[in-house]
Image (cartoon, rainbow, N blue to C red; front, side):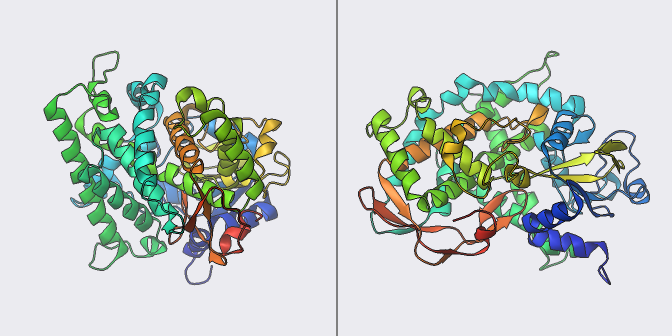
Length: 481
């Protein structure tokens, strides 16, 4: 673009990734080079020449859609690496300053290790996410949900996104750190939310200066604060030496075949990633599901009937959750229509071809899960919220993948789905939530998707019948209401 060059296209993308990507897919097909210029400055793997080679090779940013492309990228783990920090945020090692160094520690979580190192880390983390371990968190999830809903009164106007954030934060602090409502855990989560928002600010791309008042200064301050808090939590847990049921205790006890444990940097990286991912995506999935249900009265009635017949007012047990097919379909459909993570980032580790297009090493890919989930060839009337479609719809894992697929499928998917279903089943047995007439709903889309400014909804008694309200805002571009 004139004057601003490649940055102009990046800013257009950041402003509305779904709209811009959709325009490009319609015009050029499922593999689109958005800009031939680097964004990410971290080496994608051994043998890659770093920043200079990246620029010289013409690597850039590529948007990808389609099941076959998803299959190739998500199964070829060694060819397509994961990247955690997008944008010109990750300095090469020779450029690291003391204030930037905590970023490197935050990159040691599962989101930013690859190859043999990823396989080793995932093996060490798997015991913390074993089925029986996850099911053991059910009681805490149900109790925290009950305590959250005890504050609800018919007629109240509540920010449902804020409520779901607090609820999932409490679940995350309890299951990861073993501390319910631990002040450190909640403070850490709040900082991580600010960190994510700051990271995806367009000004981060333009003003990468560690100067007072700049987004980059705020980003580095938050990075250092998150690093210090996570380090303090890990060291306190290690010093106590207790054999507890929380995930952090499991990570501290984990050993590989050679008896090697995770070192402190790895523990801190994993703890931070698990904590952030453990509440952010569940929060957004819950908020969007409650929003969609408020617009579909008949679905709510059918779901209430199912919950009454199986649960009879009780919190859902593990066994009962398996007997709620409509609840399962509602969650699946919500995550299809408004996926909490609509974009999956990758970086090309070696020169390669995808669908006949040459991809130089260092090319950044963004797989659009949103556009795959809205493919009319797979999902009839894709913009409509139709939970009953799941009675016959059987997409492959590369056509429907809210938790990704292949070797990097989200390790916490079972945890997240159980939490989401417990919260919805408990809430919908007691209340209905109504969106006030004329509410404006605009999604903030980065790697995750959340409602800008929260999501205010009116609490109603279950026996109160209401009509869906008129909704304004950019959400109408994503779903038919």
